[in-house]
Image 1 (cartoon, one colour):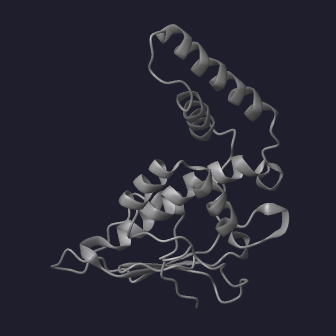
Image 2 (tube, one colour):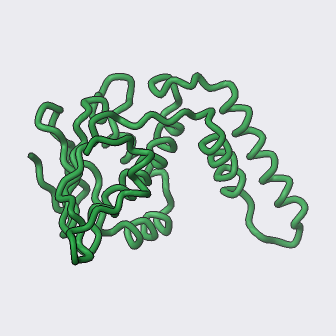
Length: 196
């Protein structure tokens, strides 16, 4: 089957007849998903995330809300000025866009893992690993992950513990680099990995 990622990441349910096991053993992502920073969902998610990231509850709720509003407006202005081409975005925005793409890839792998079925997710497009212009997904993933506070990293590990970064494995899912791409970078210490 060949289908757009946006259609199958949440709606793919092909099971082995008479079981709750997925009929898919591997998923091949042929083209790097394109996300437009000016699309409403990405635009508002970025603004909301930036606004909620500042201010803590305190004796002056109005001041806290004003700080959140200022940050949200700063992010809106930045997004409106940003060149929408992925290669031209600031690195932190590329990493933010990547986080959204990863959600789709994780959902797709989750569909294929129905009933505990082992699955391999192949990232075929060389654009996933292209080092020019700072657009390689492993590097952007590292940028995103290291920008998080330790508590946030722990939450991600708890939620997505069985989902590994590109080229690394977990007991039930493998995300592999394609044979024609550069080798995947080494994983962080303690993370098992497998290169094709």
